[in-house]
Structure formats: structure tokens, C-alpha cells
Amino acid sequence: MNEENKVNQPFTCGNCRVAACEYREENRYPKGCLTANVDTEMLAKAKELYLNDELNQKLMQVSAEIESQFYGKYTRVEETIEFIKRFGAKKVGIATCVGLINETGIFASLLKKHNIEYYAVGCKIGAIEKSEIGIPLENTLLKGAKYESMCNPIMQAMALNAQKTDLNILIGLCVGHDSLFIRYSDAPVTVMIVKDRVTGHNPAVPLYTCKSIYSRI
Ligand code: SF4
Image (cartoon, rainbow, N blue to C red):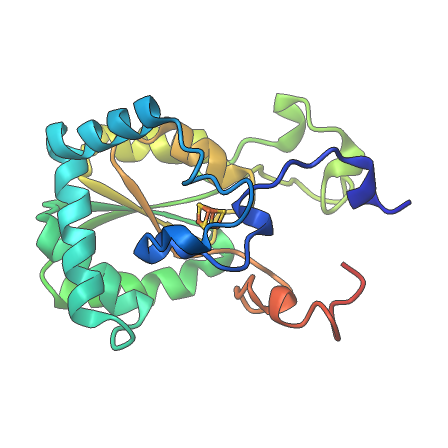
């Protein structure tokens, strides 16, 4: 029995191959479709939050503008810069992995060129040793061979909160550390680069090649 078979997995959108909800093609909804069986109260509540919360409304409006005007034309870098401008962020926060500090430097210089104020914080801020928060030696990279600072996503969020940034941008935070950053960020968060050390930060690669190169997954 493989791992998947051990889980009692109900039908969800993860099993759907038609995505008929995209154009509300009701005659194509699959059995167990989450739209056909939607919790109407929950749906109404979500709609209300888009309409009646100023920040939510703005995020949705600007996202729609970017999608409709630059679909398939703008790269993520261009979309992000456009988003910052249209969202009207006065100050942008960048939470970066120190492993991507050069890429952050390039992105930051582009922001400057576009007259966008930014404040960037690297993941090792404070240089706390991993053992100080109880990370065992076997879960360190260098196994005690050298001082090894932990990533500090909570502090990154706190530092950007203190700067009162209007929008925070993630550049290459580790999986899990990004969860902590998002949890503690006051400002809305968007992602510029998702870390994947093996694929040059393109996590979709193993999905495209899971029947060949990445069949091990
Ligand atoms: S809501 Fe229904 S149609 Fe849409 S992706 Fe999910 S299962 Fe498919």
C-alpha cells in the first residue's frame, strides 16, 4: 500500500480535472464538486469581506487590474512593481533569505529606480544560534562545526512591522519560515521568489516532470 492509500481522502478540488467553476458551467460540475455543494453561508461571508473591508477590496481591485491588463505580458517582477504602485504602498518591506541577498539587491535597485521606498531584512537578523531556541545539533547544517545562526522570520516580521510597511514581499524564505513570517506580519504579504534550492527556485519543475526526472516523488 502506498502512502496515498493510507489516507481516507475525500474528493476535493485536488482531484478535479475540469475546474468548471471557472465559468460556472453547472452541467460540468463533477460529483462531490465543492461549488455544487458549497456552504452558502460561508460563501456569503467571504463575499461580504471582499465588499465591506477596505483593505480586502483594494487588494482585490488592484489584483484584478494587474491580471486583466498584463496577463501573460508581465513577469512576476514587473507585476510586483506594478502592484506596489497601484496599491499605493508608501513603504515596502522585503523579507529575504540571506542566500538570495544578491537577487534582493537587484530587486531593491529596481524599486529605487521606480521611486519606491523599501526596507529589507535578512533572515539571519539578530544572529541567534540555533541551539538557543532548542534546535538539536543533528538538525543543523554544519553539525556544530561552526556558529550557525538560525533563520528568524518572526523578527523579520517584527522589524518590518516597526517600520510600518504597507506591503511585505517575500524573497526566498524557507518553507515553514515563510509560514511564521506571514503569521506575524502586520502588512499584507506577497511572494516574489519561492525558495527551491534544487530547481533554481522554480518549485513547479518536479510537478511538470514527476513522470520522468522526479518520478521518485
Ligand atoms: S469547485 Fe468543483 S469544478 Fe471547481 S475545481 Fe473544485 S471540484 Fe472542480
